[in-house]
Image (cartoon, rainbow over all chains, first blue to last red; front, side, top):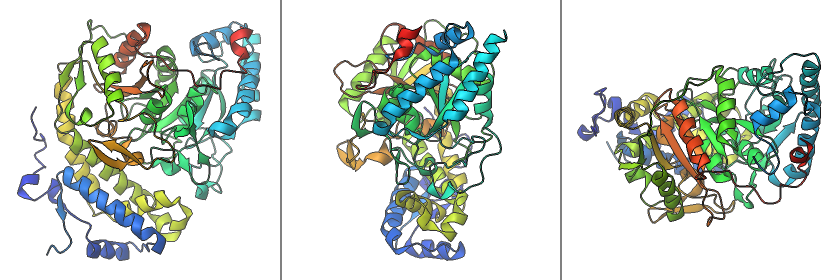
Length: 73
Length: 458
């Protein structure tokens, strides 16, 4: 089977990710987005949300997206 | 056909001929629900008055010499995300109980009612359809009729359990990532996911536009096809290929899943002389579905997450908050990421009519069981129940979960059969063949066969 999309949009091997999206769910990036969207994460939800974001980062990696890590510039 | 009901086709024929009275059928169904729902927790609302009025209308049509339709007097129920006239559409959420009541029934409910079917009530689900367990903080846990200590699956768990317990002959659910096929597998009934975009979603609370579909739960294949045809508004044409060319998927769909489940899949594969094929992009498609669902779910519920995040179930809240906080562009990237798998499916369907996988990696976990073992690793049970169904949802193809006859298994096991877009006729034809030779059959749930006068009253 051909492993490459006919759309030509996917280029995970080059680090561009799908459609060039850098999947950044580092703490700083998430805090910025929460502020922009006026979302306040309740204290008791923080561990659960963090766990979900970690799982989603793993899925992003499997999906071929370029995932930013904590400490990445 | 079952411990309680004749087939839907037989039941409707007997009402149309005047042999049975629809009002009696509805009354018996209401009595069964009254007796059994307390243990199973499938129904969230029982619409007794409406059901009796509708059934009496069907009977009046028969008396007047008019045809009530192909589902005359057949009781059914719907997942609690369909609009039902005069009731708030909860989508399994406590926060929606105070919503304005629906002005009309959902289009698909109307189609069923126009065909003579009788709406009995609404059924439990994961909050906002986001889950595979039907453990709902407000509306309770739906229990598996085959073992009340085990999950019914979700998110259409109430629908699957109601049919498995023979409380109604059929029920409607919705399937975004497997929410029909997963509970069908765990509860041992048939669950249909039609081609995405085939059935109108008007009056159905949405989750993910690119994935949402409506499908029926039944106990036999002819019933599944009949209900699907009424929902779609047309009859399926016969599929001519003989013999059927089937393949069974290895790789992602085979590695590390429960040996008993693999045995069930191999049993069906052997009956169809299926060849083994690997689709290397399946894991990527599954992850893409996860991301798309999370991002769009978060976006859809953003306002409520901003205003009152505590009004959600804790688990739903955390998943939706995480989804809302994903980078812009995640949805488009996820859809693009699923394309290679869709391309592979297109290619494989040039050679094969259907493909087979397990519908779930395990049979129903215990409700208190947090993890299951996949590939030797303990993983979250509820998140992984959909791993076999998710790749196909995002590709838009039709699929069906069928209960496999495995005498040695205490709990039901489902096999998933998938066809090319628009080829539901192939699925139903092959399912009927398998049913005829006894490879698939909906097992009877213990303890729900009493109070079954319909069998004797004909």
